[in-house]
Image (cartoon, rainbow, N blue to C red; front, side):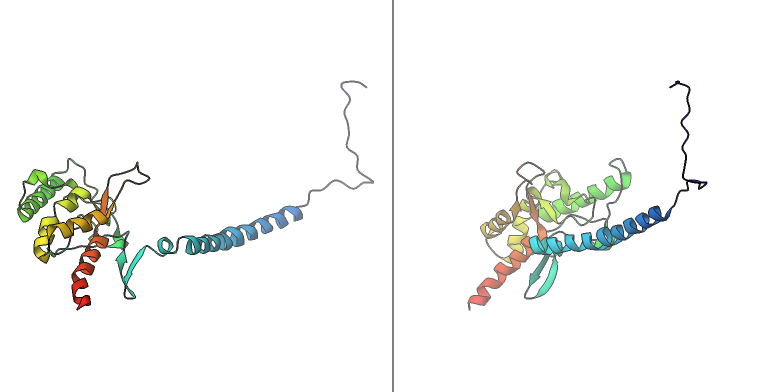
Length: 214
């Protein structure tokens, strides 16, 4: 056979070959149905079901309940101004979970520096220490605005104030802080921290304990 020979495709009779899109349309519709039902319905339901079965507390927002009443979430900070309670970090979002945000102010922003200096001075006077002794997380806002934790240093500097306001031994408050101090994540990430809401609820529980025994 010559290398220049041309092979001609012949069809039976005089019928010309045609391309049908029926198979493509059927496949497209089937893929759309599988995607919508499988990934839009079954997959989310499976995720919710596994979350509720394996991690029910986390899946429901890590809510904290007392006597059947939801008091908050261990993932969301709340404001505390009473001297009987430990203070949370400042919040640019006013502790509103629907408006989570930081101040977006750079370290060089004069307004940020002024606010930090004023807050540091006020806390130093309140705690009776030098301004330089105030931990940075008590004068700066977290990126989310609802960070529920403070550093162990920020908790330690508040112990005397809380003990005096509640009229209890410093050792009692110090022990509660130690109990509610969380270590580094996986033993490596971050720093030791204290969940403010959980600590303050523990303070109230201790205060109610003697009355319950009478």
